[in-house]
Length: 100
Image 1 (spheres, rainbow, N blue to C red):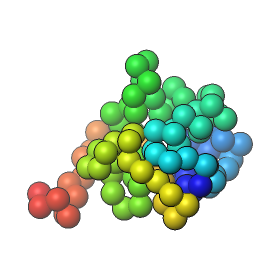
Image 2: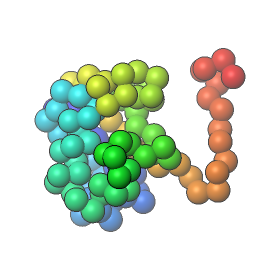
Image 3: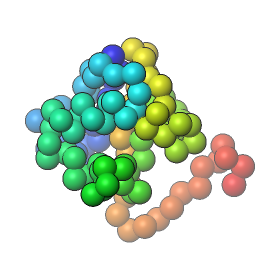
């Protein structure tokens, strides 16, 4: 059962819920459950092919799932999954821990 943190702009699609407990073994299962329970959220997280949109960052703990196993990233009851939509305007911030 992972804890999913819903960002403020997306809470209107989750009945204003900020945190959800979702029973899942991978980030992909978390996303499937989330979009099944809150269908209006799906178009904001996934593209037409069912892949996480490029402007949506998903973290398992402090790690971007793109740096892990993406949707196959394993989660457990201690995992905090954070959804972080990119800020409009296209400003990119370089992360200091990647040696950039």
